[in-house]
Length: 287
Image (cartoon, rainbow, N blue to C red):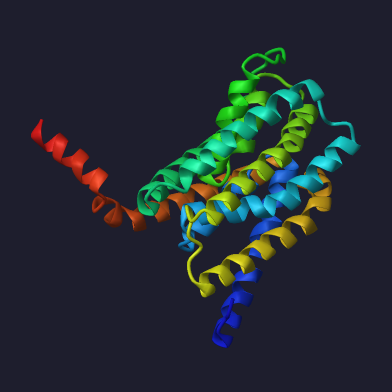
């Protein structure tokens, strides 16, 4: 891979930007058990990275951050193994399906879907931060379908395992310590499976990484996300003590919602030119 010398300043800027993004996203994720993928995906899409490449970059970074986080939770005995052994296999199945489907769709159309999904995740995160919690006894019913859905949305949207799975478990009354610990531990295996699917898609030509300059930009973003996340991971416990989790999650939710709205406005003219959208509009016009 040959990189033009003129590109090095841009690569340094990309690395610095995603170092900050990875640091902030991991602080939020470590403190409240969600939002690393959603925040990172929103920023990558904002800078024009196609959805499949954005999701692949995030999950490659998460192989490191979720591994460190999961090991920490296991060490501190925060994992409910009954919950873990239901979530992990289900999440792997959903994640592989989501990654496979994501690499086969038109980039413009799937980006519109992903932007809408991330906006919905932002609203869910905001509700999770500000809204009341349910008070129900914890149970293991419907955990497997929840894992499948969470894995699928995490792969296809570049994030969502935490907002979907953790929020649902906490809302059903599971103890935060074991819900967050079990979900984070399972996330490592889900992330590895999703990353392996993206590698398979690249090897089979199903996903195009672009030219050398685009690959270099992707590597710079990946390294920034990994390093920022690894630096922030040990600080999450301290941040939880000094900054209320509701504030962190609210800030992350507002960021995701704002980026989704901005991307939606920019994407709207391109979306109107998509054949699928034009056929729907023609069908509605005939009624």
